[in-house]
Amino acid sequence: MSTDTQFTPRSLSASAYVQKLFEPAENVAILVRNRVTRKTVQRITKAATVSKPEFQDWLAHENAQMESQRRAANLQPTEKSPT
Image (tube, rainbow, N blue to C red; front, side):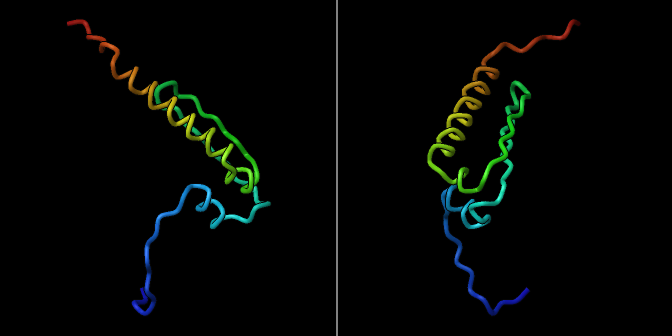
């Protein structure tokens, strides 16, 4: 590993991250896995679409839904095994 280069970490938004990694016309696969329902949603679309606010809003919505489902699942009483 070279110590000659200076690396400055910086924070990127999800949209900026996609734009840095992919060309706008490249296909990108997005998988959203719900751990509670064990369902997976897959979207294959262009990087330009993924970086749009509408797509990012959809991802945020899916994330919020999963978080509320996870909380609801954690609030359910646990089943007791027969003794």
